[in-house]
Image (cartoon, rainbow, N blue to C red; front, side):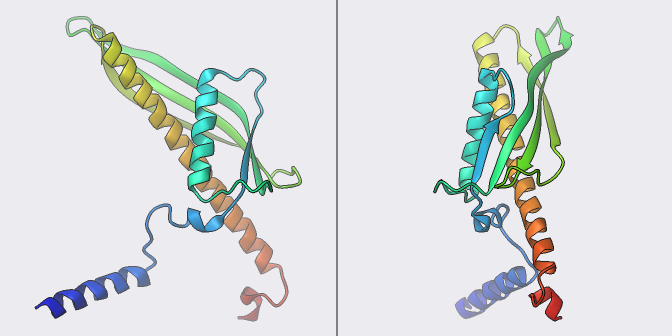
Length: 183
């Protein structure tokens, strides 16, 4: 019985590996890009500083090393974080709010040339707060803000990884004698 269980587990794992199954984000660790983030804003806010810290941490977790050479530079050209008041229910004392984060980013190669057109990423999340619980509402708002920062930072790093892989594939396709030309 134990042998059958082990064999079935091995077969399932082989099937998953054979169909291209990967853990989410596993491909990012293989890229080993060195990413630098530069400020493209004239007056950065504290929210912007927090976002940059999150972006740099996400890039570092994706396999970016800090050996001094920079493969890709991210220039943050636009940043806006705002919380808008939505519906208010006076009887229940609940306020619905919408947190919105918009970031415009340009990716530059080692020579400072644009790798692609700048892209804009916007995420938002609605949440409710109780006006009688100010400390709890502030804590909830801070958690949502951090979640939005992490969401956008992950999207930027994944987009950058896809962009670099596409360009590497195009460059390899243009090289005579490469694998793509041999077949």
